[in-house]
Image 1 (cartoon, rainbow, N blue to C red):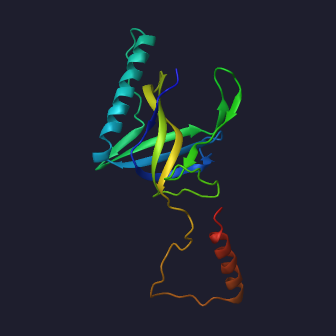
Image 2: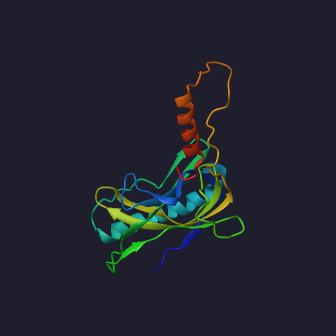
Image 3: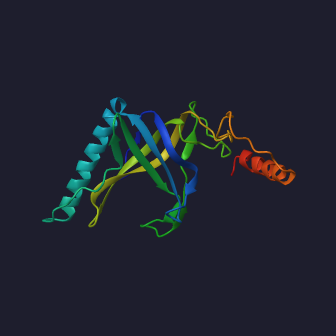
Amino acid sequence: MQPTTNISVVGEAIYPHLNKPDVRFNEAGEYKVTLKVAKSDATEMLKLYTSALDDSLKLAEQNHKGKGIKQAPKPYTEEGDYVFFKFKMKATGVNQKTKEKFSQKPQLFDAKKNPIPLSTIIWGGSKMRVAFNLVPYYTPMLGAGITARLKAVQVISLVEGKDSNLFSKEDGYETTPEPKAEVISNETSEVQENKDF
C-alpha cells in the first residue's frame, strides 16, 4: 500500500539541500530540509505526526509480541514558539524488494506550480510548502518511529544565494593594499560572485 502524501503548511526553510544532495555524513547522498513553522500554525501537522507515531508503535508491538517497544526520536523538535519539522530523501540506494539501484530527487515547484530550473539555488530563509510521506519504521536500538520522507517542494518566496557581500563598510581600520594583494583580492571576489562556489 502506497503511503499517503501530505502537504505541510508554509514554513521557513532551514539548511535546505534541495538542489544537490548532502553527502557530508552519507556518501549515498541525502536531499533534506528543516521547516520552521510557528506553533500556532503547526496544530494539524502535529496531530498527523502523533497519529502516525501511535500507528507505528502499534504495528511494532503486533510484530514483536511480548516485547516492550520504545518510541524512537520524533522527526521534529519544539523550541519556544516554533516547531522544526525535518524532511529527507535518499538520493541513491538499492530497492529492498527488487534489489535494483535507484537515484531520485525531489520535485521543485514555484508558487504557480511551474517547475523550478536547476540553476535556481534555494537558500535558507525561503518560504515553502513540503509534500511528504510519513513512513513507519522499527529498529531494536531506536524503537518504533516515523520518518518524514521528502517528495516535493513548492517555493512560495525564494531566497537565492546571490549576495557575496557579508559585511557593510564601517569606519575603522583600513589596510593599504599592495599591488600583489590587489590581484589576489580581485580573484577572490570573482570566485565569491560565482553562484556555484
